[in-house]
Length: 264
Image (cartoon, rainbow, N blue to C red; front, top):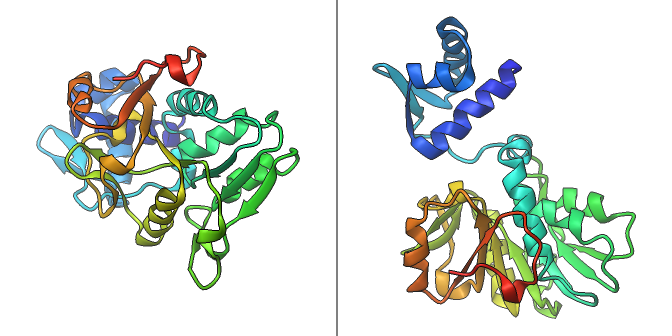
């Protein structure tokens, strides 16, 4: 495993367990203590983690990771989520695909759809669908380079002229109490508008997003029709979501129609 891969793995593990001991990491990664300490020193020097007695934790200021990092983190789970989301999309639909590493994967599974209109603020989504028959509409605005997205402004783009049947939204945090949230205000503004305009709202988010309430609130759960996540979700959330009006769908890689999904 290359150093960069190891360091990404360390951050992935910390998003799940929050605090890790040195002994746990050496066993999990199969490396020596000296090699691990070099990785830890690099991550600590970049402000990603903090050293504590006998282990490490995420730095308190640790926030949104880069798009390049998220494109490879939890990739299998994100592909399963995207494949499941694609089953909601029918020929002739007008849909919105959000910027984000999970929603980007949806574009890979809809290339054979007929008469599809895709509205997006994601440059990678546009690139993925450029050579397909889909009609592409990119939201105008300012390029956010680190997210590879366009953050829109009302004076540039008239959202209310869009007839969006289904919006596929990403986020960085999901809680029962506060709904979905994200780190960037400009991204959140676009998502709020698309949720407002869309007839059906589907959030695509891997299980690491649950239990987090990050910087900017996007929407409460009552505005979200469905959340699609992966099979690593803490089963405690299943009973909690039964008390809400939001469908919780577990994507396990098994193709099926949306009406037959495992909803909780």
